[in-house]
Image 1: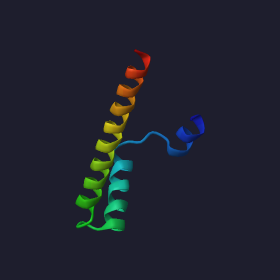
Image 2: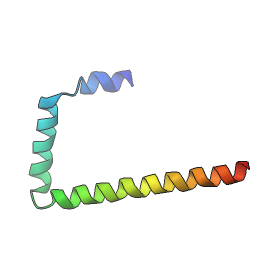
Image 3: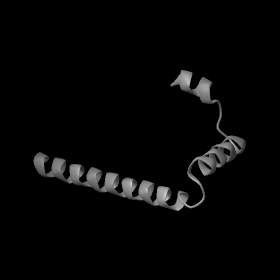
Image 4: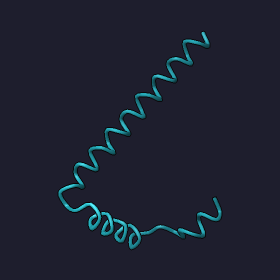
Length: 62
């Protein structure tokens, strides 16, 4: 983890702006909403799967 911190340094506002500009250049303005929607759906599915696993573990422990 320490080596990753040395590689990335402290991520601040200028670095986030550079990352946003690079993403905008790579994907274009029209693709970004679709990309964000896909990421949101993926996060939603991950949370649902996590809840299902927790429920299964609770049932097994009873």
